[in-house]
Amino acid sequence: MKAYAVFHRQAIEECVLVFAETVNKARSKAAMDSPYDWSFEYIDLYVERAPKWDKYAKEKCVIETNDDLPEGAPNFYNDSSF
Image (tube, rainbow, N blue to C red):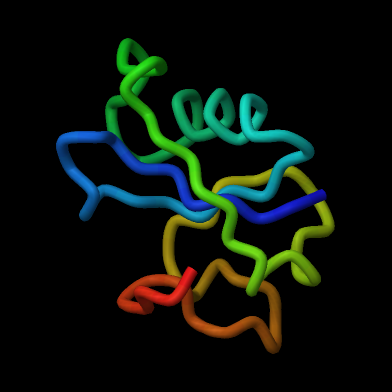
């Protein structure tokens, strides 16, 4: 399991942290489960690795806020160093 930052190409501020096995699974998970309406935007979603959060990626999920991060994980939102 790895950590990915997924965002829409025209709205980088709409970014979510996704824990998934592959880039395409992260994109798909974000399209289906993010708080943004990306259901028809799959091809416009960009995915970048966020290795700083890899050790916290235990199960597939979309992290919507810093409060949703596992205990001990560094903040993702408002942190540009992914």
